[in-house]
Length: 236
Ligand SMILES: [Zn+2]
Image: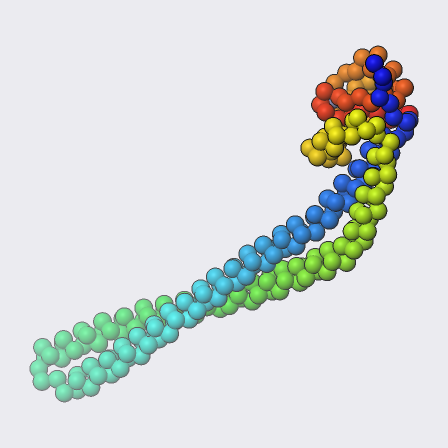
């Protein structure tokens, strides 16, 4: 059987180039992911701010309603007091006094509630301010990431193109009869399509290699491991 061989060092170079190309491609893919993560973070902060604003609006409405109720009750009490002066009987006087007492008590409770609501308004106002700062920070972080990614984009593209050309050049050492299989493995394993022999085993899947196979690999024979990858001796 004719032995399919490759020149020494060629596969190692090809492997290294493929790894560098994959690293550059990974970095290119990371940019849009980082931008997306920043956008998600910004949206979350915007939602939190909106919730705080709604809560503040609700509290202010509650305070206004209670204030209005207080004013209405005060007017009612004044009314009752006026009637008290013209009470026609003791019975009527007692009833009016009872109503005034009850309404005064109700207003006292209402005043407490208004104070409590106003102090919550103050708290939530502070929370809204904080949330606004958070949105601003998230917005700036997004803008910075977008700038950084954009600034790196052109360089990465150039690196990628240059490395892809180097890879193509390095691949010319592959005998034509293995190219198809090699392409298939690159498709599924990426830069791990090639693997150096480490401690007499496949560096990728760790399967032990026979002495015979090691000799053949050493002489430059093309050999695909059972895991699929293209093996090579690192020191050759
Ligand atoms: Zn293997």
